[in-house]
Image 1 (cartoon, rainbow, N blue to C red):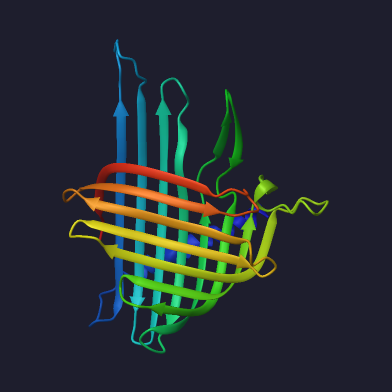
Image 2 (image 1 turned 135 degrees about the vertical axis):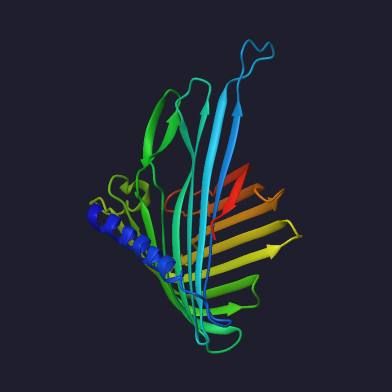
Length: 285
């Protein structure tokens, strides 16, 4: 099972890497490959020595990599995106702790029937790259690991594109959750006596992307992903990722990210993550 999980995800990475190589070809007329890879490093540090008002030394860093490779042709559009985010925090004498960790790949192939509504097929993979812990006083409990768990989704349906800023899609979807060391709470079904390390669901998917330029230097990027299992339409999995990015100078950006996550099988309460960062940004191409 571990071999299947890791092989499948690395196959997705190889698949995206192949797209990067093909994207090097020269674009012809208005069609062809359009590519973009942006890297960002955020760093925050504070140090104290005989400081009467008190305080603790701290070091916070975060690395963001975002890539987009799109092959647009007269009758089809193949959009491939990749996202890698990782960061750690160290405060005082505490050990360094993971603050953010996300690895996500998405590939969407759209066949152009008309100007607005078109059929599509899509595949996504999402996981993390390092062990995550839940801290309880002086002890820590591992709750996730390297590529564990991994979420795969395959879907097919119709998409609607209003303009370059707004697009949405809706279709039938299959979702798999694969884990090796953490069946609870990610994959195990408490209603059975066996411990399941793989969970498969069939349902419907709704995905909306918004890329809105608020002004000359500020961009809002929002992605809403909804998945509903056919056996429980009242239990909708929600992933809503929002990023406001403001360009201060050619290489300096301010980013504010809010991510909302809800999956009743993992937690009956919604999960919320927020991060504010100032850092160095570089566009590779």
